Length: 225
Image (cartoon, rainbow, N blue to C red):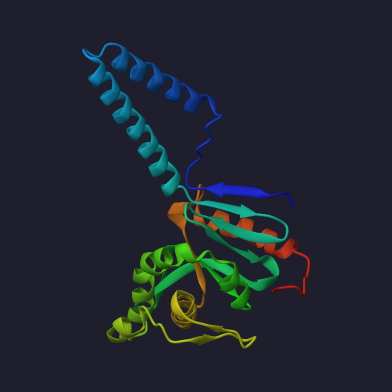
């Protein structure tokens, strides 16, 4: 299968729309600077407009979330880093649900169940772990609530206990917190990694269908680590 790129929004500096916006911003900025009453004001406006442009670009790049689906692996790209998982290390991918009065209601999250934790823990960028732990706290609470264990939430939400993987490798610190969170999420939701539907350019079920086609087409590979 051909590689597919998915993002919550597209930002291509080479696109015609972006180039027009940059051109207009440049014209307006030059006009403001050229017609400044004094040289000091011209320098001031130059600094302010340059800082505003750089800050806007930083905000755009920081808020963009991208995914890459290749024949061999599935990868998430964030501003600070990302993670990668081989398809042969994924056992299941589906829409996460919340059980309420006997009914399963879909949540705006897609769950991924792994076969082994170590490859994922070894691939993830440490700089994004804190963001993942904080952004998915509510999901953990919902899982504990539906199982009647919400009173224990504060005890496990950031569990720093040393985590020992199947291969015997020991994880401490942030990696241990992440591994323990994955363990608890699997206990309450049945999945280890979660993707927000808001970070996609299509509906959740469409993305699940696409991912399952890649999963089904992936060749067996014993090199998970």
